[in-house]
Length: 193
Image 1 (cartoon, rainbow, N blue to C red):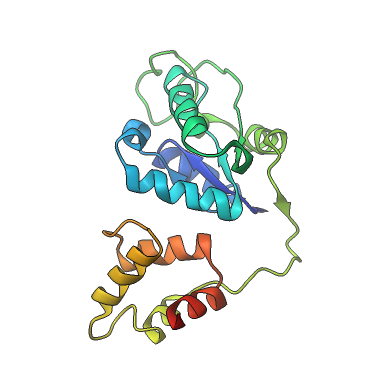
Image 2 (cartoon, rainbow, N blue to C red):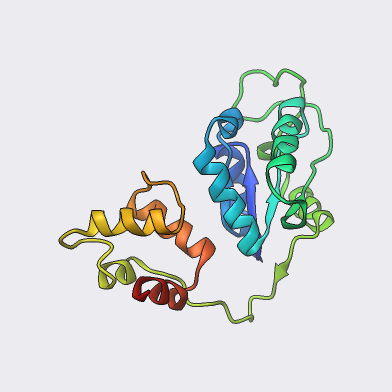
């Protein structure tokens, strides 16, 4: 498995499943055109892009380019990288028929094509020997009073508001978001402040 520094944004869960088998990186979904209506998700994507960079990896069909262009206008270009898959005609194994344009999406690409697209996009491939910052764990959330205790829910909501993250995040979703944006030490400092 190849580790990548940036977060990767794909259209849906099948794209995410395909990438998760090839790369070790945070993989986020747009939920297709759902990204157009979800201001909280877009705000979260801006934060992730600013903190660690964001690789937009949508399908090569018209819908993929509509989503990509929306993100280009919503997030500062210096934080975005764009990975493109080639036009390959066919249908994914799970589908009974090809898509509207007859092209394979990210989920239908072989691993070597996906890795090459990420390389061409300028993804930051990390050496497995590199030191990675301490991740935030569920135990950290418990120790900080954000999970499993009296008033944990209220404390989580206050933290989400302070960090300008979506207020309806579960503890698990918040944990994923925190790990994308902060180290364990940075979170402890935020809580103390």
